[in-house]
Length: 464
Image 1 (cartoon, rainbow, N blue to C red):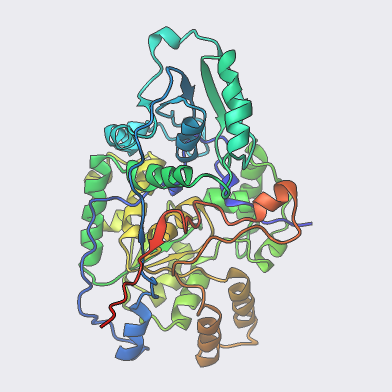
Image 2: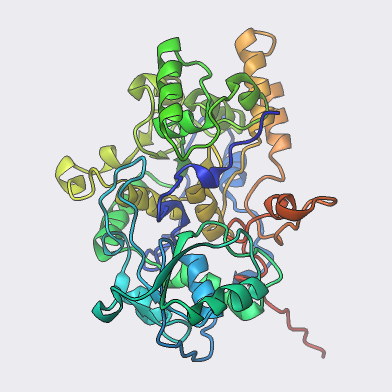
């Protein structure tokens, strides 16, 4: 049976995925300029297009916790947010993670190249002891490499894992994705996860400065859409999606998938994947979607992506509909981007900043970066595209059995009426599921950290 390829597994053994990073704290939201866009929609309709959904009085509710002292034991681990909470649970000192240099992207960045290392350590000082590297006296200490069990709760860590300190002085987490339960953890642990990801982690000064420059230049065009266009070689190879590609391109992607050891699923039916909504939308499909929602042709759009597979020829249709397509390379000079080139994590960080600061965020596919932006824009605005329904309509248009126009526009607008960003509580497991399948069916903590990271303001009632 064809399965959806989970977004968490794209990076395989990567130690750090930049899609999980937080909103940069120093980029203020500039008030929207008067909307001068004209085109298919009326002024009234344009106002409605750019108007965010109600936030229902939800605000961030992360407060510093009580002082907590860790024992003189250390945990060496490859990834961070959940591991901060795990270190707290097992009374450990955390070593700043090493970024994997062996991933698909071959990125040589260190943690301090991407994040503000000193801020990370100091902002969590009252929660967990964090050090930059393993002390020399522990380099030859007894150590264990442990595969923590997926979606584990407090009992697993405080009983089974904490008991390992009897025999070991250093524990290395071999894998750190989805190692901590989404729900049923103490409130202080959930709040710590919020602080680790959305306050403690912030970008390095160099990345923040460049990100702000890109935002300012994008803002000069007025209100803008950030489009996370996952039409990149690695994503297409991983997902097995080859719609509208040549046989040679499909073969190239298949070869990449077969030769990437940590991508476990090799035999993928592209037609079935797409019909079920499991494929990244093509640039052309995105163009049809935006046109159907009646965004005018002079809407500024920032493309948050790496190199689009097939190059400029693949975005011809989208470019013809929306000429104001911009990306890092069009907003900045080669000299300005030179320090970040060949560092995928740092380039993704720049895209992340521009996406978070956008007026509307639209991901073409699920992914860690898309979901991180959605969380940080929970009080702002994003569209979550119903891919399965959209590709069904696009196929009808391409076959000639349906024409773009009012009917398509009305239908697409209707099915996306409730797929816009607005705070809501995290979904629990699907009824009837058990074991691992039960945890898999839950909405992940970092996809929607409400109510843990967002609180609803109490409305005071005045009685006269």
